[in-house]
Length: 302
Ligand code: NAI
Image (cartoon, rainbow, N blue to C red; front, side, top):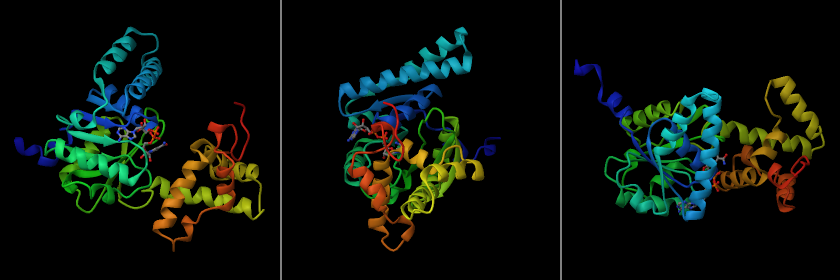
């Protein structure tokens, strides 16, 4: 009978048209996976050069995915052309949300800029459209404040690289409705991700544990209690982590780590777990940001 399907179960399959705002590292990955899983996707950035660059990266990445999935089989080329046929681009965020069921924002990590964007989108999007931010460190509630649809607002926090990483943190604010929450989780599963639920707290689950852990590793180094190399070896062989904390920080970017902790420290000055690190600040000041600049805690061949 029709009663078999609850309203929220129906809602979880309701997302077909997805608009992704921001075509950088994360936005392009989210748009790619959404297109690969049969959603109709519009990917938006501020100019043509940026969207073209992102499109090229997506094409390369889809080819790798297809090869892994199908080998040289002809299904591979079908997968590639079908995925790409689901993806269009735009440089106008406001008009791109006109028929969106879901908007995922992955623009620069800046509260005022995100609020300004959502304020504009709130007026342009249909009333059923769900808004979500991929922010790593900002409060979802503060971003949602810019809109009149807090019940249809949440966090969808993906991990880099999006096509590879299985996890999706689905974040609810106090006002997020159950239908919205179920729809976000259902969409995450349709994207092939494993979803976990978290309230709107700094760092959600993964970064709330990982960022203080990385900074605590720097504090061991700052005190001269152990070397970076030995701390990394210890955590890999003693705790089974695939990367040590210093390798991880160099991969993520020291500037990103500093940016996140500075924001949390400012907001929660009494939480010593969010204290900045003088050594990390010094490295960032010297432009030693990690793998991307050729040096962070370690040196890399460029
Ligand atoms: P990115 O710098 O690679 O990309 C951001 C893109 O947004 C740029 O192409 C920029 O031109 C565009 N953009 C900026 N303002 C815009 C606007 N008003 N309208 C349309 N496009 C605009 O940044 P990334 O790394 O992709 O991060 C994006 C978001 O995802 C941030 O909120 C970040 O915290 C979050 N995030 C980042 C992760 C990472 O590992 N880099 C992981 C998970 C979340």
